[in-house]
Image 1 (cartoon, rainbow, N blue to C red):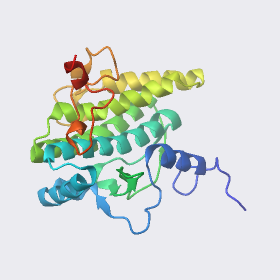
Image 2 (cartoon, helix red, strand yellow):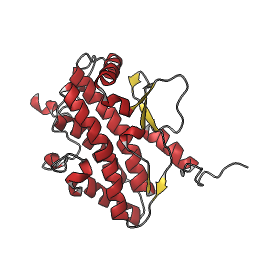
Image 3 (tube, rainbow, N blue to C red):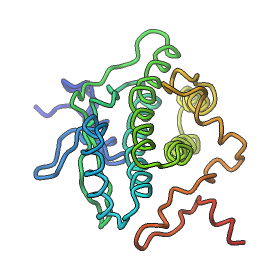
Length: 254
């Protein structure tokens, strides 16, 4: 008998949820055959990280370590943030997003280097107890136990500016929640979108981000155009690269 698409499988995700996460956020529930994979934890060591970035640099047309680090973290943040925040906000579910559970799948799409990712432990857990406490724990795991660790390591080994790397993450959070806010959702989901967005960008405490002394997104708060960047991600310094639509360098030309 065919499994119902709205019934969770042994991993706790329905077929529809798995398909949506894969199609929209480059999350893989199966590793493609004959594609290189990299446990994210291995990249916390200098030599594997530099080898990985050198390979990535050749694919994106970058011979500058800082540029490659920035563009890698944009892709890393996109994969990790979009999938996990969709699960949290839209489904009231959670992945285990600790960095040592992440596996990067090195693949290209339409002549672009757009790695996807999967998890060693793919099991999903549903909301239990007080949602604010549950959300707090998920956000802490996502940042303090993952994004901040990778960001700090990249900054140390490549001298990539931390502000730039944090804005690489922020731009996807803004894009994600602003997109959802414009969609037609029930009143309860709409409120959840607004509350989660507010919490991550404004209300989350320093401990949610590990070693941070304050919410790292505070520095961008005075920007009234949410999608307009304050730092440049350096994509223009790649071969055939240009300034992104949200790049602050565009204003320097006027």
